Length: 424
Image (cartoon, rainbow, N blue to C red; front, side, top):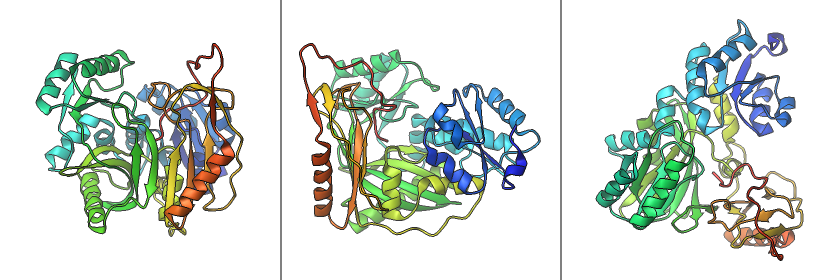
């Protein structure tokens, strides 16, 4: 059992997590950390005060394990940065925390369930693609006929672009839906068939204090063309005109208000089609990859610290210094083979570049569009102009000297050392 005398501020329960930053923020604010996961990774144990292995799909078991660990002490907050655990987090906050703050169960469900997201926003008169919830291939075909090809197929509760595919006709749709239904089922039944919105995409990061939303960053997102959607990179500034940015900011305030997301953060994907902005995804979490660091650089706000402070009821600090230009470039490949590269140690500093390759030299890689390909790392650079970003990225790529080589009898491995194959 944790010792309440260690910290007078109390205890924060964290559901899942892999990054030291998720836990150090809590501890630096004066709270003890209890990490709860299906199987707590060894590398996380030194970062927390206590850890519990529990079946996170059993809400009652999780609640009882936390009560047994804390005794008569109520947690100050239950927190997660893992999207599938947001509904559980909201439930436990309402059940165990004396003064629950942040994301409630309704808002968590509104964001986690893509069908519910679109239904709530559509009923509020906000722009979303035309959509239909389907449970069979025949229903999907009928929905596509009504909407008109091309259509996008996606799981109802997926994340990271898993299972998302653009279909130009009946054969592609049959294959995509059949593959989706053949995959392990999620918590929510069915899939979405929706209108494909052709146009530029933007990643929008926000923090909401009470009901007042501030847009922290808007990044122009670069993707592979259909049928699959692989993140190639992000740019700041976004290229939106001032009037377009004002329209987007107001749309975000309306969207989060309709979904009931208060005292929390969000990472939203929006496309600008021929008839204006359309909301594609609303995620009640920080973005993945290194978009948190990129958002901090351009806004002065660390989303990991911001959401932690909201969860425990602490005020936000003043924003830090910012940079004018930023670029996030995914490391992807066009061919399969063995990856060779040189290690790069970036220059230190608040706006120093970030360089990550998530597989070791000598591992095999696949093309970006392959189901087992995708994103193998990232380069993030900052500067005072687009030209400065070009030079910085080129210098890092030259130093990395990424090469995909082939050999007789070489076949890409079925798995690699990455935890995820997408960025955000």
